Image (cartoon, rainbow, N blue to C red; front, side):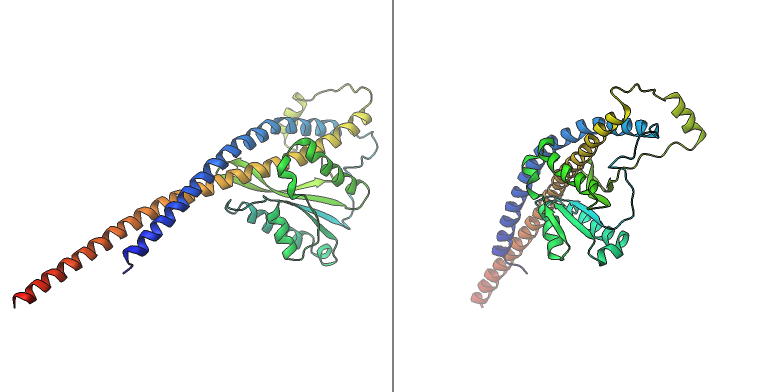
Length: 300
């Protein structure tokens, strides 16, 4: 049976852990509120830009081929993995890392075998993992979370766009967690470049709805100029949105993990205190029995 001293030591240890996890939960909740507001405000804007681009490109068969929708044979691919810099957020990082690794090995086995798949990591967890596994990590942007603004993200997006435009890579893929709520995040494997226009409706109801909702645009100065200005902006916004999604997912996952850890610590404390009382009672009973037995022995 465990002694009283050992039980008391463990109770103090669990109480200290509970205080830490509770504090981390409150910090994460505060950060989540800010990150959640940022992504919820951006989503409608990005979705409307995407919708506008799809509508324009569907009716733009007379314009020349654009630089960012050039679908070509895959000779070299760039994969971007977005995780967090810190842990203690459940499987939030692990799921992105494992999905990225799985995609590389299943979708691009021949390219990977011939060292034609490069990786860019955002977040120290992904950087450490892929470097340890000797994957070709081209560059990391782990410091971006210190100043996660559109102005800070835009130069990275421009580098990616230029690497596709000049033919360095034939496809760029992004893997990250999409924020749903504090307790739920969804893994997203997104084809970043080349851009693919959403398919036109196929069912009769969809076609009828499309006709009713059809918008006739007047272009000034010209259709080509507007599209060439619009598409780069949408691509940059999509990249910024992916980072905001991953950032909000991190804090949501960490808040949930720390909430569960705090609850587990509370339950463990109850069990430990119950065990402590049982051990204490057993010790007192044993001492009383020894005293009584000693007294009886003296009487004899």
